[in-house]
Amino acid sequence: MDSLGSISVFVQVAETRSFTEAGRLQGVSSSAVGKSIARLEARLGVRLFHRTTRSITLTSEGALFLERCRKILAEVEAAEFELCDAAAQPHGKLRISLPQVHGLVMPVMNKFMTLYPQIELDLDLTDRMVDVVEEGFDAVIRTGKPRDSRLMARPLGEFHMVLVASPVYLQQRGTPQSPADLADHACLRHTFHATGKLEPWPLRREEGSAEPMLPTRLVSTSIEAINHAALAGMGIACLPDFMTHDDVAQGRLQRVLEADIEHVGQFWLLWPSSRHATAKLRVFIDHLSARLFPAHEGR
Image 1 (cartoon, rainbow, N blue to C red):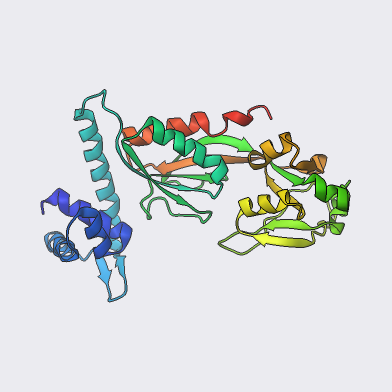
Image 2: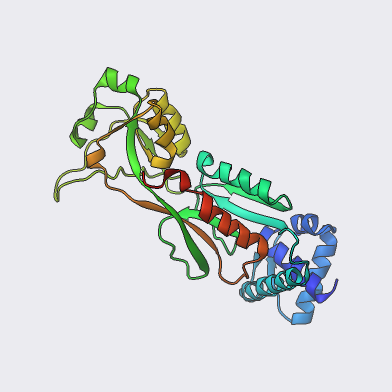
């Protein structure tokens, strides 16, 4: 393999941690991948990977080389695009990590696929905090203020957390008039997958006052599962307004304690600053910025 080909193979191995998987992606055998890496290490005079029978990990030299190689491949991709017909449709593969809010993100993804049929989307729907650079994602959508200096960021829109319950549940159990009343209700709680901790409800409290008791009826790592339980009359849930907007408008859910909730969250689109914004990534960024939250502006 030529030098550029060896670099491409090296990046695939670094991102997949597997000679076999890298070979599958490159369309060659795992032994060919191994020989390519061995020749590259011999030419550089350094070991790029620690190899055992069970795992492949980067050496410190390999980690430094990986960042350089990603920049090289991004430059090549950018150069190839510039030489293509300017009228050609953006094409290629985008690997994207998204939060597990299918109802919010999938209509936008479906529209994107319709507009750009030559772009292949590889979607990883997860609430875990992925390492965008190390895991080889082209972009991720996440909440919270970005803190990783390796990433570029664009805000996509704001959302608010709201307390909701079905009319049937509220008829049976009564409507809480203050946060303290929640002690007499069934609460449907979201728990963080990575830590197992319950997500706190953003209830206003006077300084020094105790946190309201929230008797738990259901705990789930999926907010969509909690939404289904709320619609079925199982209890009161704290959910983002984009998820409950239509159900509230059509009377399937009712908001409660609106004056006692204080929360503003924001979705961000993040992508590696070390990579050029290729045509496929540029159109993806613009598409999400224009379409993710337009339906609920002014809510």
